[in-house]
Image 1 (tube, rainbow, N blue to C red):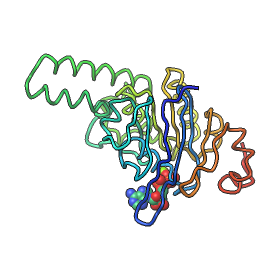
Image 2 (tube, rainbow, N blue to C red):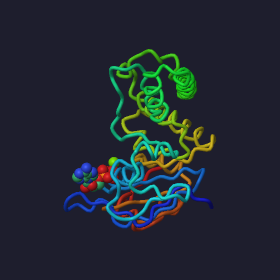
Image 3 (cartoon, protein in one colour):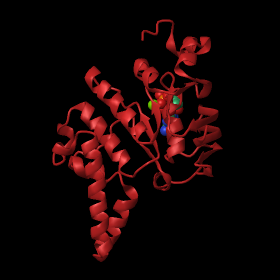
Image 4 (cartoon, rainbow, N blue to C red):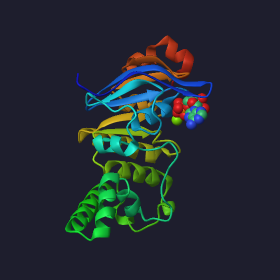
Length: 256
Ligand SMILES: Nc1ncnc2c1ncn2[C@@H]1O[C@H](COP(=O)(O)OP(=O)(O)O)[C@@H](O)[C@H]1O
Ligand SMILES: [Mg+2]
């Protein structure tokens, strides 16, 4: 199976805290891969290491066979990795549409540069950005809300808006950090369908999520982190049956 992303023994430390220890993981292309584990296990730290928010103190990250360790976030996004955050990060003073457009860092930087010079490229870039934003607002059922303020949207739609923003840069790998957190059941079902649709379009999904039913029903593979260490990688069935995983995380009563 071809891998889109590979980490080679990555570690992260915050003062005395070993947030990640020697994590080697391969993420197969075109699949849905989830990372689970208790709070503080290092899941978000792993995303930060991949997406350029905080480079690992040791180890290497490879994307499409090329090393990306230590690159800046925008450089990593340009290569095709995009992400959402565990805590919603929307700009409250901007419209829904503007919030989506800012996700396209490389094009919007180009646009600002060209707007100063008033070039033809400026208009073309603006058009491309509008078209991409409209495509993803429609995909997530946000188009009719495009002029609204994001804070006026129900929570589930704010989460979708974050994913729409992550999609405008046309990523091949999408990192979702607890996208279902705080959603009600109907919103969670919709989110599940959206993730499946993105996957069908060819986007590889790397997902952090606590909702076990959600994770088990969506994932091709699951990795379990515990105290910054990789406990197990396997199919949902293999994870559910693993004694170590049950002890560390799932407990004995996994009700699916
Ligand atoms: N910026 C930081 N500074 C200090 N400690 C941090 C920082 N980020 C994460 N940590 C610590 O690293 C560990 C892993 O955190 P995190 O990756 O957020 O866990 P998870 O996402 O699995 O809940 C925790 O002990 C957390 O307190
Ligand atoms: Mg986290």
